[in-house]
Length: 326
Ligand code: NI
Image (cartoon, rainbow, N blue to C red; front, side, top):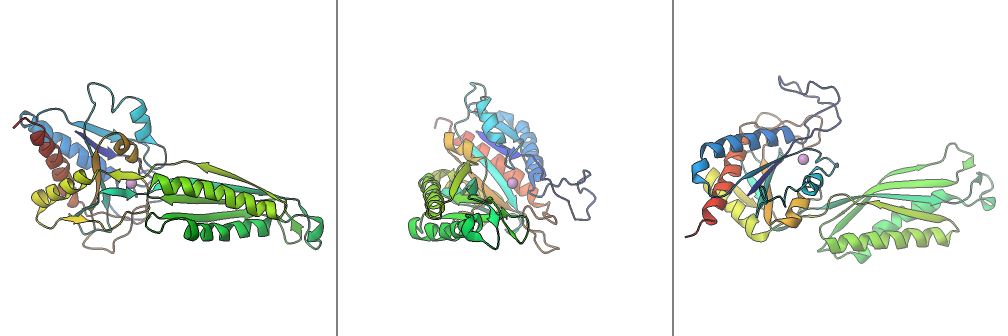
């Protein structure tokens, strides 16, 4: 059984007044990965004390580089899931969130989190004088048309029950009021909750951008940097995790989520290879307005970490019991 806790922080200021706030300027544990490390270390201590009760092995995956650096993928490439000494047959991870009441556990089978790819579209046309556009080929209206056409493409060609999101979050072009620039660049994110929708969005983005640029005599180069794949929970493992939460933390503490969230996770690489589940652990503080992960004011209810330690441990013990011959 593999238990995972990621450990990296984010490059941002921590604007809270706590004795344990970050001592490194411009670096903050705004996703609570420090809590993940503390919980996994707690579970390692607890399970080590009960080593005699455990049939088989528990692998504690302390993982760097979750925030976009593919840390899990590197650990897999280094043999985490294939080395005879560590090869697990199930995997489990917890991610804290202050947006769920403290001590509650939420999950679902199937897609839990989205894939996340970076989209860049470079429109190249012909520069000139802004007063005489007929002598140039203006890339700015072409880029604007592409932005709007992407939204039509999503709603008209992607199954609403297998959704995708494309957001163009950055447009860059031009230098002043009376010059038509030669190029324009669009940058955004692509999210999907199935490999099928993800691929379809990639194909359609290329076709739409190419076609619109060609219609105006410009060219568009679409670059898609593939990020994390969809995080897919095994259905049985999701159900089992929630019933273990009920049994360990109290009846009703396991909540079945109605839909995925469009954030992304590199635990997806582990769940592509090994059945298992990722769950969200509520850490909503009782004495302040909850701030979401990645907020510069994110704070967790630390008492929820005990629930996380108990849950990690209970999942491993349950797996150990169920893998023993009857
Ligand atoms: Ni995170």
